Image (cartoon, rainbow, N blue to C red; front, side, top):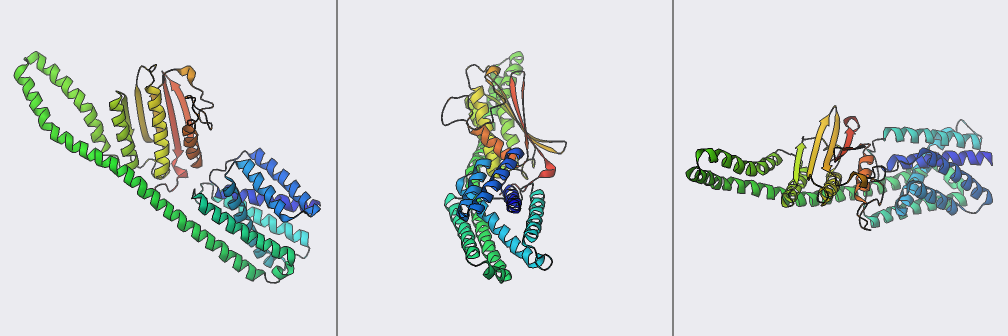
Length: 421
């Protein structure tokens, strides 16, 4: 029974390592994970000793993964059975080699499982930046993949329980068949992910190209209005005295230039998502008499966040900033956006005035469901932002200074990721 428990501990460690390696948002607490591994190993050993059936073992693993990482059930089923298939292929492959040198079943099993665990840990370390990961895809297709992987696993397990010698005597053939089936499912998955990315890229391009077209039209309008500005100044020169003229022209040009300069600055922003989001918020700021400033450097976040992630982070943070400065209690309605590189670190900084410092709860504002608006439909914006930042190993720093709240999201450039879809 002790040997069975040791083997189950090794097997559970392998499953958890592979899970963490391919799931980019599975940053669980290490103590919680170790406790889950220990409990699962005990339960699986007990089920095996009682001879209840392998179906209950699968249920124990899936429930444990769902509770530990709080993931979608279908996603848990898919990743679990996929890791089981990989584990089975590796076990059979290593059996071909190890059985020539080790004849004791328990010793051979420990050596094989230990080798696979080492390989899983190496893969986990090499893939810590999540270059190979499970992408968010359509739930129906996720169900299809989960069903297919579970069917492959169950069929293999039934064959093993019925006549394991049939498999052991044809290990190479079984490994090749299983590998082909797994590779086929991976290729289907990669194709679907590619299609989803292309559709998302097209959707975002269409959405933000419309905003860029508005910017171009506004610049053309400003060029056309130049004649009117010239005529207005000419009229001032005709009706005002020399002392009044200087002040009048200064005030007139100041009102027009501030917005014009911001529009002109937008032209030099390369990223279409950033450009269009800032433009739309400039229009909103002008409508509500809010002072919106921005300092944007190019190629700061392009290799870290993809278009959708960048859109989610910027829109959520700016929506919160506008909600705050539009409160009646907020006197200074100032918002500033900075996207800059500092000491080889990429920063996205949002600063805005706050109505009441006492209303802030810095410890809970990024928790799921937290909101100061007391509505059921709010409270997920900042949580979603944190999930995106965490998935790219970024950091969040929040400061309150002189009536302003400063959100600083920063990423070490050495841990970069291919971002744009």
